Length: 328
Image 1 (cartoon, helix red, strand yellow):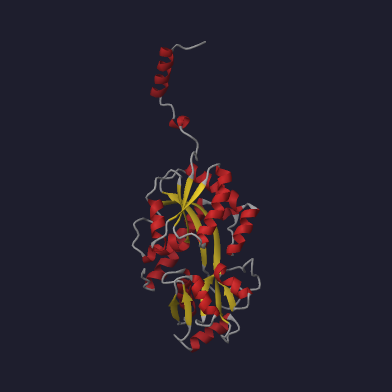
Image 2 (cartoon, rainbow, N blue to C red):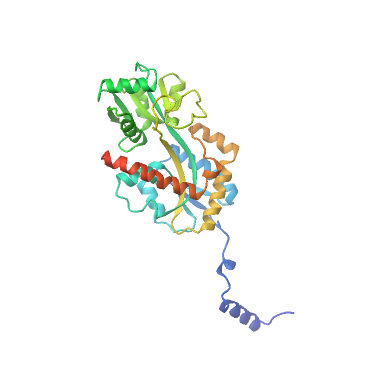
């Protein structure tokens, strides 16, 4: 039976008046490309992680995930770009703990790190490696602490600048071990490591991705990894607890967030794409070059990332404020 045009229009009006759900007329998510904002310049570890992840997420989402580099103010500009975006799932913030934890203690931010974002997933982590120039006489971590205590403020530790992970890791090491030494800021972690290799500085607290290659080449020596378990890629290096300095645990980690008010359904879709990507052997193989470790499946949830971020803020903000670190 065919409806006359007038009858059809009347039926449409009745359905509209009855409150037919909007979802029936909307396109499923995602219906267009997604932008993942990296708050640093291209070529760094966050950018590399983002590009590998985005390439694989495209398969799950059936839409391109486009990387947008927005550097500036140690990540504040890029994270702010996402904070101002609509909560529709088409603009995401990827970043390390420095941009989503540390910056809140050393900058006056134009956004709230906890309330202006929805966590999606914890992506990877990399514990700090304690390394030193080959000429230091200490044979183990306990001996290194004794050597530092024997000459307070004489030794030097290279950093990637004020508020960088090596700087914060060094401050935390001083707090835990009651040692004192000088910090030497560089423009990048790579430059700091090069001066350590040449003997211009004495020690460094660095990401494994930045220091492990020089340890393997015999150019510097590693004392311990600041984690509860040994590195999968360097099992010969003891943990700090095994080396005699308990409680010094520090890891740089990466997460993915969406703007606030993003729906739970969209978050679940994005989380599933991340989980599928991290389970892909090809992705894990490519990320192995970054010397990162992957969270277990039960720690890849939005809830786990949110809990970790809150716990890290509670831990680090008092330490950073007590150290009176000021943004450069």
